Length: 197
Image 1: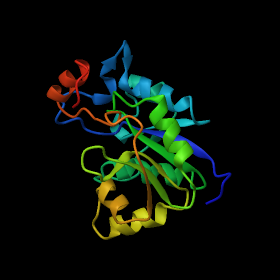
Image 2: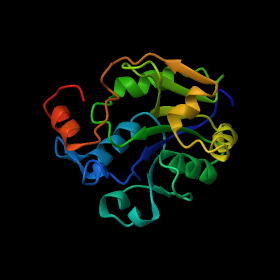
Image 3: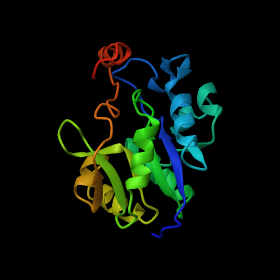
């Protein structure tokens, strides 16, 4: 890992959205899908942005608008997208952001990038609710694939638990509700009303 390490963006949009009942990537805010909004956000901060999708989602019209990295792994949840990106471009650090964060903003992304020292394989915010790492708005260094694979080989698929058990640089969120996600219709209603989810 070096100071000149390239950082590219990865928008995680491969979820099944089972609790929401409809594709979370296609939810709209201010006339823009969550997917398009998140891609545009990251494009303001890094030179290249990809969308992570499952094989069966690759031809979905909204996802096709963007450069994609299709999952090469099954049943690993968000880790499938992260590892697939690392396989495709192993010398790149990845700024990973989930597509279901309607409040994530430029200040949050900028502070994450600016706060990263490069001396840890992972950089993440601490949750404003429980103090644990926020794995779906985080930077995964170019040398961190081996650590992730070792966790997977040990049966661990949860990215938050991976960061807890790893050498993770933790930062304080500039905006406490920026990483509130929407998983259910109730979450969406609260977020649309401007309340915490």
